[in-house]
Length: 553
Image (cartoon, rainbow, N blue to C red; front, side, top):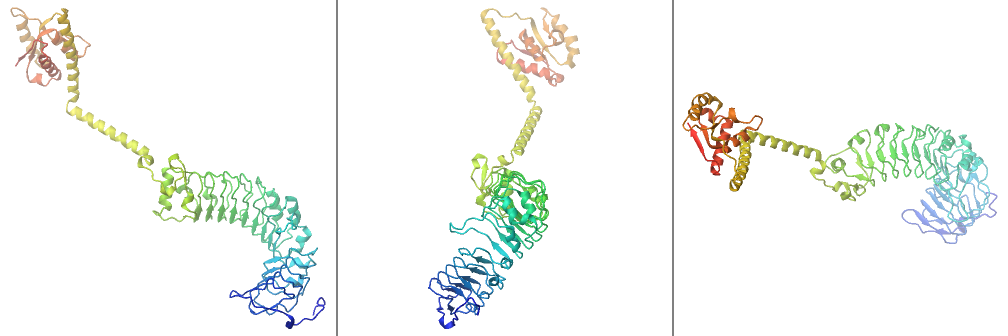
């Protein structure tokens, strides 16, 4: 028996606890036990002995409970513990007892210990060097009582004692760049077996310094430096080649630089002030967290050839499309909700057809459709992207306008051809000439009524085809002009005014002649201007202004 036990006690003096359930949990709390009781279930896994009056833990108190993993001895009056009292525990709570010192032998067989709580004891030292050398996982947290302040430094000599440490959690304390330098022994690689280091939620400000402090930790895999006061990233940094997971979220970084280690597989830069991410290539990166920044575009996919997961929620992203995603050769999961999406036709069509079920894609949206809302245009603001319906005119405006212009042009061309085929131009000219003749006839009547009528200059206006000119000039005209009494004739070759429109000349000739004489022949019928004259003569005759028309066949 160890000399620290003055009395020899036997199992007959031990109480019995039978409050055990089917989960192999025995609740022996608050029973006023003075010594560790015997338990009715020998395969007990969790034993709660808190809030009793136990003062010692003997060598054989727990020996028979080989399945025991969790032991809670908090809030007793324990002053002494046998060196070989504990076996194979994973969680041990000795808080708020009366331990004056820690003995390394207590933890020598606890190779699987993951949680150890020693708060509220009266020890002043952590014992000889071997005490801490057995620990592989250490979390330094402030307690819930006001008497346990936050830690601002772990001295370098203490770090030298943690030779087997693999996990160190110093988050939520008051560490600064200066005190962390002391805790990590100025970067001399003291914690050579450390694999996980968490110094988040402290008062650190220099990324360059933290990289120098950990660069000689050759087994470091996971580094959490989030929720600190970093505002800039240096151009270059030195990191351990084993580092694969880096968390720098919740800082104030505005840009990234080649300071980031190329070995990273998981990078968390969420909730910073980043506006762009296009200058750093990370060939091994598999998971990238960029939520809560101010990014307007997806990072170029060619920078991350191995990327599988991208989180870019709550940024100022306007849109993205198939060209952006094609650059991510291995991307399989994307979260891009809660952004300010511009619901253009291209973006809505891409989102609905890419992820709305119409097309099966290799990239999966792992957040809800409720996170994908339109920010603009204003009529669509607040609507879910997958429920937006845009009209063809909104989506194909240029095409529709082009088609409309083309149809109008084709219809216009067809109309012109139709007018040409139906001699519509000829009829329009005649209509214009008739309107002018009608207007002149009205003016002439007003002058007649006023006694200011212009005198007639010719007895007849002879209208004939140019191909009948020989007969008209050699036979008809001499006969009429040499008759008794002689007739005054108006001939287009002789009496039309040069430079005037021929229709105006025809109308003037009819107005200034008593009659119109038509030399009707086959050539006359095929002459356009002869037909004009004949139709005008008919119209004016109907209006009863000119004297009449005579046809010579």
